[in-house]
Image (cartoon, rainbow, N blue to C red):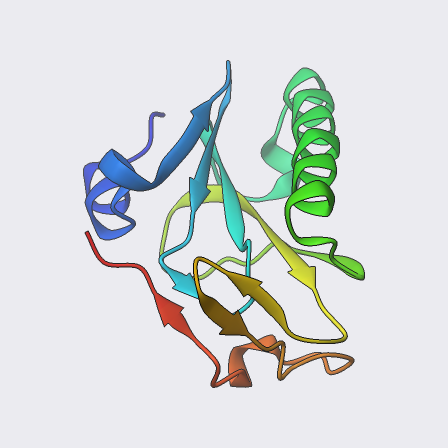
Amino acid sequence: MPITENTYKRLKMDWLTIREYDNWRLVLRDYQNVLGRVSLFSKNVHGTIADVPDDQLIEMRDIARDVEQKLKYAFNYDKMNYQVLGLVDPEFALHILPRYSGPRTFAGREFLDAGWCTPDYLQNKAVFLLKN
């Protein structure tokens, strides 16, 4: 099953897609509660990680390695968090969240990781919402 039109529109994939892979779409999240937050959406799987075929899991791992390298170079994160959440969208998604022990500056804005060393990054109030 391809990515649904609802997910595509809601996540503004027309302008926030960073890269397309064979089975995955890497999307910058407009809610940047942690700098560099991205999500990797399956183009084929609606369901859980158990539904992802082995070859696509290997591709997901390889993409995660590449994303980690690029985010380390760009923002020098301190830790990397991954989340697999079954929230609104039917597509399987891996959420990639670099974490920072101190402030980072990007595009003239300071980003704070207020959820550093806490499990609930969603409480971070230092947010930069991307607008088109």
